[in-house]
Length: 272
Ligand SMILES: C[S@@+](CC[C@H](N)C(=O)[O-])C[C@H]1O[C@@H](n2cnc3c(N)ncnc32)[C@H](O)[C@@H]1O
Image (cartoon, rainbow, N blue to C red; front, side, top):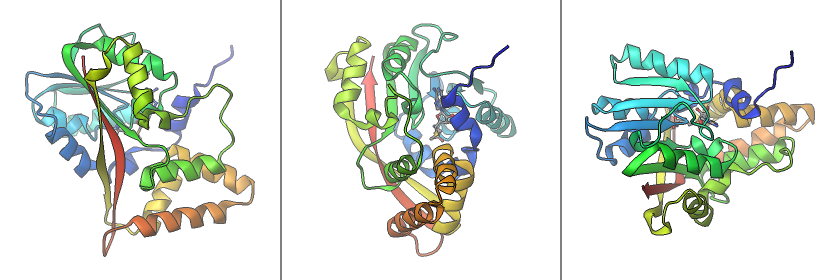
């Protein structure tokens, strides 16, 4: 019997995104606060990780399902839900481009913060999130922006420069940060263009550790950076990659001690 490896799943199970997400909790809380969540809402958090947005949404009393392709992050999310005493929050494995286990029109709000953007087949993702959102419901995506000078867009740019080229036909996740592409995908899924709103917003990465220690966390736990270091090490370019990241993190850090780095993203709100 041959086992087919899903590279998208392997990328995120390779590391432990929960170690990075720990630096994103304050912005997750702020984003959820801005969504006006009430206990009567049924919410899907897609590409939920271990619950940076799902946990604060559930704390507001909503019924929340986190879906993520990485089994280790689903387990971490369920452990958080249990330890925080949130019976209205659960996580399960799934692929944002194929939500076949979820019924049509079943969520009032679908949130995907730097999650579904990483799924292959972006038109399938748009079709699936529209399908599971009830008419009149909302879809909110957070997507990193290609060419943006701030932290994560630059980490991903630098990481891909050192990584092997993607397979033919691969659509860059960063295309979810281009307004025209976002509108094209949602209109193909049946949403009128005027119901797709895009604006820039900021997520801040806060950590008591130094920028250099935070880079070490990305190197050990963030799939795209792990792959870049693997390839750079094989090519004898590890020092160059490390230096590029050191330069990026130290120039963007706004904290006197520890690390605080704001990163710009495209916030997409779709009314179904
Ligand atoms: C950058 S992390 C963000 C996690 C979380 N939303 C947060 O803000 O902490 C990207 C997440 O998307 C998940 N992911 C990637 N591809 C996916 C797919 N096809 N379907 C569902 N989740 C996916 C990864 O496993 C990972 O948890």
